[in-house]
Length: 462
Image (cartoon, rainbow, N blue to C red; front, side, top):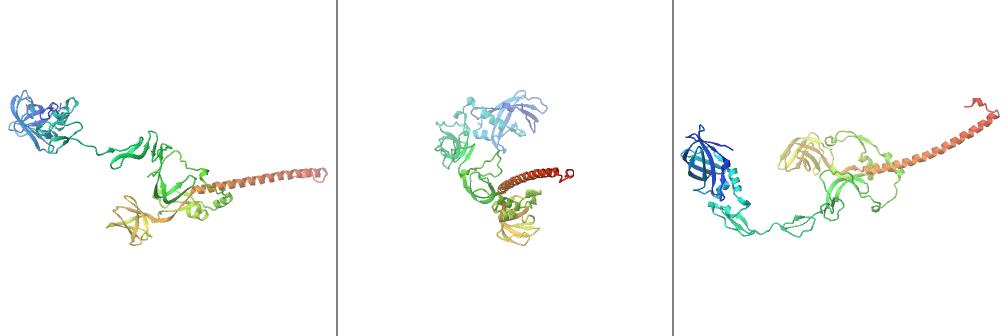
């Protein structure tokens, strides 16, 4: 049993209220409060006392009050509140605290929080699991009028309620097809683009070829690396048709690209001898990246695109990208009138109109150079100021990339040429070895004849 102590300022009496004994009448206009009243020494009181009860909201505004003559026997008492002054619906809704005054004394402190118990009592008052107008009341305990089938109860805004009929206007269900996810077109639900038969999902088609099938595309401009169905790879930029876009990597067990002779126009076999000559002209170079922050400082052993372009240009592509030709942290950042002026510790070599990539405390941004203040400072337009700025470098339209798949195929062709050369040399060596064996046999026969005729000393043969 929860016990709460109230202290009188004059009589020094203590009331112990059992909140579990608050009961709510079905009409929501009265509730019973039981308590125990004793002296400050804990001696139960037996007397008839005038008690004033007040209900307050959570802002301690007085909502309701009632004074009753209460019989206290051996400290115990109970009183039905709302008998002379019914507790209206709005009071029940807002009531949070109960205050008690005994006789002419001031109100006991602290006030008792009964909001949760009171509203729990409301729920319990709805007997036999049904809500009827006789169980709901408006201001002053008036019974709500009966509604008709299909109507809903709404507030009139003046602590009274009425029944009304609401017609459906949102949403309206339009014409839908089985297995299509609906979408809202602004006035009704119609077929969406997603088809789901419970096993497979498709977008813009009902023909499924895997767990997810996407039909259709959107034209969009990107700079990208590619691997097509012909087995070729490379990098480029431009507008292409895309069916799926992902902001991050895609993980799968295997990637299959279309590669069928029936979709290709065969121009002929590659000249493997020429491919070997081309491959032998390429130079492998050891290097590290300027951008050590994102690419690390390890040594790489690969090709240089500009070198390859001179020897095998079909393996090199150009695209628009940024190069780390500045790669410097700002020393001073000035922001005024939506213009950002950046001063570096080294010359930037930028010109007005060029685009530069900047790494800020809020992420990477690309900006057009509006003005060059000095060899060390330049200005760009900006919607925000930044606490730190690192200038990566300017944009170029001849950023070189290598198609390593093309280099790999060149190596395959050159390797085949080397194998054929080795086979040919092995055949020549075998023929020469056969001739040597034959000559050695002839020499042995001639030597044997000469020995027999005493023309050669057999003991001195090597």
